[in-house]
Image (cartoon, rainbow, N blue to C red):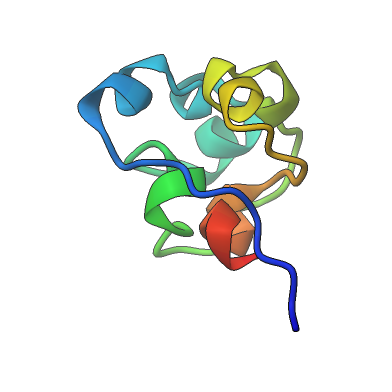
Length: 78
């Protein structure tokens, strides 16, 4: 049985608290969208240049333990 991560609800509240748009990887890769931990990975492959996930209020609230959801996908699938 594969361990699945915690589910992050795809809500407007979570999207508004998400730090993705301020992340170095987000900016360097010119990504769009937010809340990759709840919505899934970015359509384009990000250039991983630093990750703010551990500082994010959404990451903390849902006790996540991974980083680079923009590259890896939804937390519940990891």
